[in-house]
Length: 155
Image 1 (cartoon, rainbow, N blue to C red):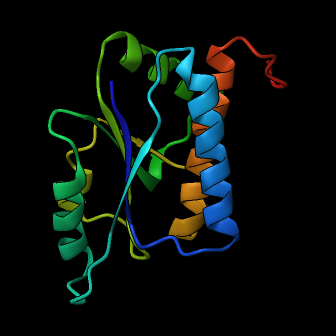
Image 2: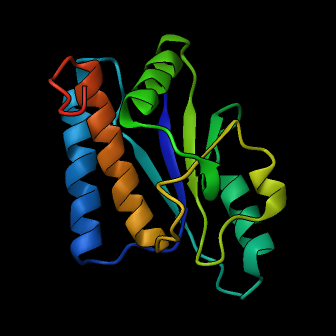
């Protein structure tokens, strides 16, 4: 199994980068005993100003072939943390690679979004894509702790 995040934009040094790094390190430590690999992150940047279509092309190249595609989109389903944990566990048990895709400031190109196996949202509000990366990293860590049997405060 392989877990990747393909995201538009470069995460520069700062609080967002520190949080993503911390949560992905926590995921790696917790997930190792559960059969999860460390999460790979691929950042793409459209320097030519081609908009969503150009970003979609760059993201498409970053997506591992055959991976389950989870697109983060404001119109997506709003699963709870246990739901994400259950899916992550099922993908692991089925030896499926998974790639979480985060678009740029304008979102994801509709053609790329149509390829999604699952579209999820962190709420109906629009979030900056750098914060979405932080929230995704935290939710991956939380999913690992749920699967490890740690008490979940909402259960």
